[in-house]
Image (cartoon, rainbow, N blue to C red; front, top):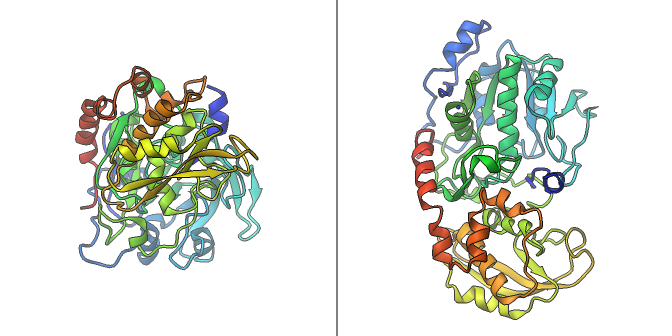
Length: 428
């Protein structure tokens, strides 16, 4: 996953904004509360691109001055020279970094989907690394308390999809920080598939899991700092003292490779920015009996199952979907579904990423897979409902609905979410 524990979850089955300016930290609770309601510091128009961490560092870590900080991060928390920010901060006497909190896959990224690293001392820095994976509420708050931090910092690269679980690690950590009486600082990074628009179905609250805690769109079109503001303003029962250190020089229509940052896979099955581009749509195949390409070098770009032949690719191409072609493909996964067995299916080839709609494409592929392969089935636990946020996609496809009808089914929910989202956007 992001994934979430997808493998663990699979088997188991709101209100004022607290965004603030990048200012010097005051020790008193009164000053912290005041800062939490201040206006955010806007990105410098026309300036060079810098991440939230780069701006934090350039400002002398003023937002963390006098505070014991702990950071929630993973291998994606790097500088443009590919040095991990924990190593940078630990070596800088201007910041008092005392703990690291590892999400799914772990701080240094040694665990596969559904795993973490447990508690240990980081060999490079000697810092204690706490395991936060699948922990939330008071249990997670107690970890922050035990770490004796004043401020919890978050810096993880997102993939842009609701079911990529690092954004729910962010949510859970914000809730826990509020319970523990801690400040929360988010260092922003780009949405790798742009922040142009929100697309896809919106989660219905009764389907909330770690692949979607709150009602946001399947492709949210936001950065992690914008999501933090949204969570604080709409979903937390009371806001956490929040500061967001925004990027400078980032535009909403930019893809990741335009940032100049090195790409570090945020999880083992997200190897490239191209994976992230298709992921909001093709991850829906986790809710079926087809392989979503795990165990190959092209996860989420390769889809298939035993018994599928060229007819699926032909039917998918006949949809005339913008920006993408489909190739008849055969592969043998080294793990996950159909491990060690040859399957047939399709490979997605995105030729115009600006025109490509990952979710519309994913729905089209689900429809044509069901039409051309008699063995098509949903997972028995209806995991597809958790991924899409309701029963609507599954039941409409089962009823024989066409592509436009299925996509039109979430139009009203999406319009409402876009109205809410607009209030928390920080970039043009």
